[in-house]
Image (tube, rainbow, N blue to C red):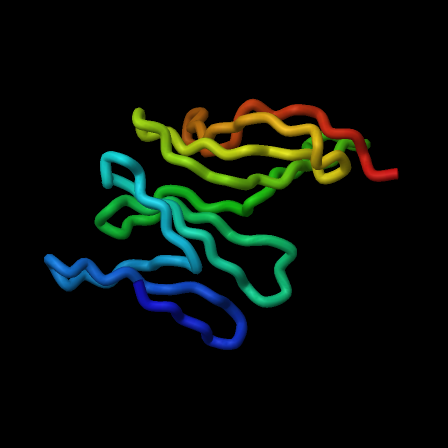
Length: 129
């Protein structure tokens, strides 16, 4: 992996030693156990958190989002996502914690519903006071 810093973002590139192919990477890369996909985390200057992206091993983008969730309900807060892990069955899971109560934690996984990917289950987090 090569680190890339262009003044605004901190990311990287992966080089496949066998094929010479160059694919996107982030500040960190986490490969699935079956090596069919990988998660990258990259930071853009001025952002409050990291952007997460899931790629196939060929370098095709499958999903992207942030290391947090937003609440769709008025008066509710979102959650931060930490410690992503690939499960043996290929699912990506992370630990969620309410923005307003970091002690309130639960496990979430990235799931596809129809054509949309999202973290589930969502839990209600109290709004900031």
